[in-house]
Amino acid sequence: MKYGVVVQKYPRNVGDDIWAYAASLFLPSIDYLIDRDRMADFATENNEPIATIFAAYMMHKFHRFPPARNIWLLPVGVHFSAGYSALRSPVTDQHLSGVSAEHLRTFGPVGARDISTRDTLLKHGIDAYFSGCITLTLPKQEVSEKGNYVCVVDLDEGVEKRVRRMLRSENVEIRKLSHVLKKRRTDKNSDWQTRVADAKEILATYQGAKCVITSRLHASLPCLAMEVPTFNIRSEGSPRFNPYHQWLYGTTPEKFLAGQYDYDFVNPPDNKGDYLPYRNAIIERCKAFIEETMNGVRPEPTYSELELLRWQNGFMSWLLDEYEPILKDLAIKEDKYERMAKMIKRLGKNL
Image 1: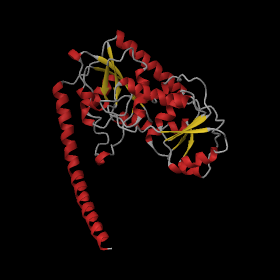
Image 2 (image 1 turned 45 degrees about the vertical axis):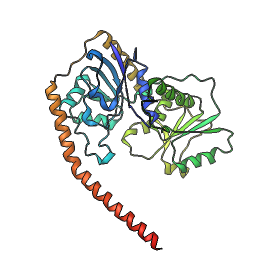
Image 3 (image 1 turned 90 degrees about the vertical axis):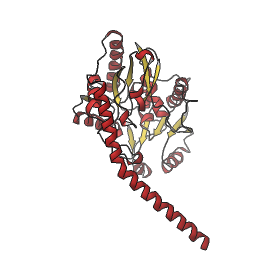
Image 4 (image 1 turned 135 degrees about the vertical axis):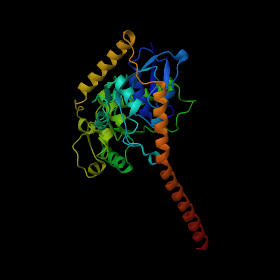
């Protein structure tokens, strides 16, 4: 059996490479990279079967699901958004129907990264449970010694300023990091070794820190896994953080700025241990999956190629029909803005 890693092909966020790296650590070999948003188009030499751990956000291109039939899938740590914001997408959970739902049932139960995803899957009759994120399985990184620094990662400007003022007299270095890549990955800098090196570099920086203060999910959860004290500062209500906000020390930006928290950033407490049963369960499931791929028989979806094509065609037709009024509205607004810009320009010349 050969194995592949599911990746976001051209990410702007190193967090996409962190979860891919975490999944890759369970694989006996890495023979292919599988584009997360084009899993339906994936092909191997001679159509040989491969196995992969699908632990990703699904997905920007809903019509490119389900994955190719020759992929033996372990869905664990999967996240679905209830609607994708780009171009005001009309998609909420319509992609969890027909052959797409059948595919997930074939390789299920589906381990959901958050409670909202689990509930959405169950609503569509897809066997699912809350697994937690694959990044909870990351091992500790090798560092020479613990550093005398605190990491601030993608914090609001006002929050970061308060952190700096608060630690000014504490004789600790503040290292500012971001998960946003300076340049989107392209074919020139998207090879797997570069991705792994970048992910391990930022993880090693977290490993050596006294504490990590962040708004990022894929900074907070790796720090839990690596036993690095972490404090999460973000607004309440994001389904991506349910139930992680209960597992993490943290608060909202508003409460932090008002001093409404109890946490020592220089001598931080150990992290809460709520994640440990989920970490252990993911590790055991991934190990069992790899053993099964070596010795077992691959499940086979029961839908035909014709049924697949019909479902994909129907979904794309529905999507185009739904997008038509949205695009028309955007065109009207764009024309209105252009006319307003010309008017403002004329007024400026007359002043």
